[in-house]
Image (cartoon, rainbow, N blue to C red):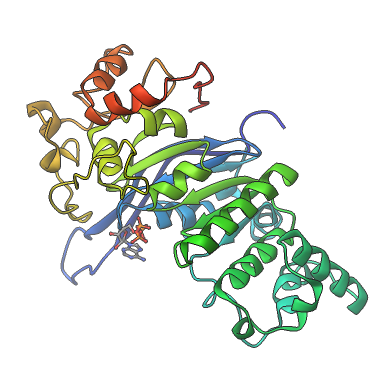
Length: 358
Ligand SMILES: Nc1ncnc2c1ncn2[C@@H]1O[C@H](COP(=O)(O)OP(=O)(O)OP(=O)(O)O)[C@@H](O)[C@H]1O
């Protein structure tokens, strides 16, 4: 294979809503607008943003559970939109999903063994012996004992159920796992166990993760790169280290500043993003963040800012901090950022911050 494992180009999803009988145009929810990114084998790309910014819709588009309004999703260089049903089945094996609620996503009437071998049995017949061996192997991979294969989901703890969800996702030996808020429903200590399990599995199996979360502490722990979404668009995409050390987009900066501080000696400020997220049915003109942005200028109200590459490899969509004309904007932006000033004092930017952003 040459090129990235997963490549998303200009992905857009508008959900039509409530068209009146005589209305000439159907109103739409602009859930995802012109989103592009790529993910390499063995890499974790996190997608963060407030509720309703389009994270889950991106996940559904990647899995082709919904069809895009525009753009493409390429796996191993193949555009999955052009695939016939039987070809899509083969590609679906490569990409599996882990859901937020491990209870509602597991069939309560099936045993753990049946749940995790079911995806394989959709593709091939297994003897009882093969099924048991596969179930034992998958349970072992996620740190559970083989005896658990006879239990029902209701007889397992939340953490065990999420391990089961991960075992089921691993059954088809995927190259990519899409995890949508996969640890949000778990206690913090169980969250840490599941995150460590995912990182171990990634090292062993070179699986790529697209990890969707609103929890920046989780993202900082797990991610290689982070895409920050606001109202359907990516506003900043950077390596995890670079993003947390010196956010450039004012929205990223506000999001990081507003995150709870686990360590009171840490570098984070407590300052929430002012105002509500506008409606994706009738989003603001120009930069959709402008009504909440303390730096907004006239141009922000008029023109949609393009994603501009910065000198450290990140991309940022901001007329003020990343004007389309200048790669040098990044250093100026980072200088004015109070979070960055404190962060920089603690953690210098490393030479390895050269993300592969496309
Ligand atoms: N089937 C649908 N029909 C109409 N609108 C939808 C549909 N699915 C999602 N939306 C809308 O699209 C926008 C993006 O939703 P999405 O669930 O992708 O956001 P999210 O960032 O995952 O939010 P959350 O973190 O709350 O799950 C929201 O305004 C949502 O209401």
